[in-house]
Image 1 (cartoon, helix red, strand yellow):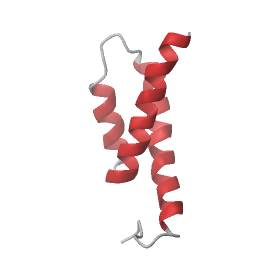
Image 2: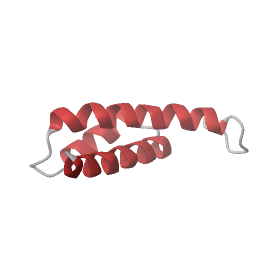
Image 3: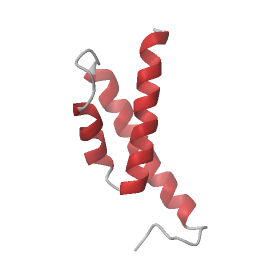
Length: 73
């Protein structure tokens, strides 16, 4: 449904942003999943946030290679 899609999209954006900044994709997924409302279906949110957080980390690594502040240590 359309109503269930908006919170999922927001959670995925939060996961991608936090994981790319903190470089902790798995911990980000657990934090966001455990802090979700009880009515949220984990079977839908968990895989989506997991994919979004790892994509956030990989894309930030690709983008940081071309910037002054490198992602790699």
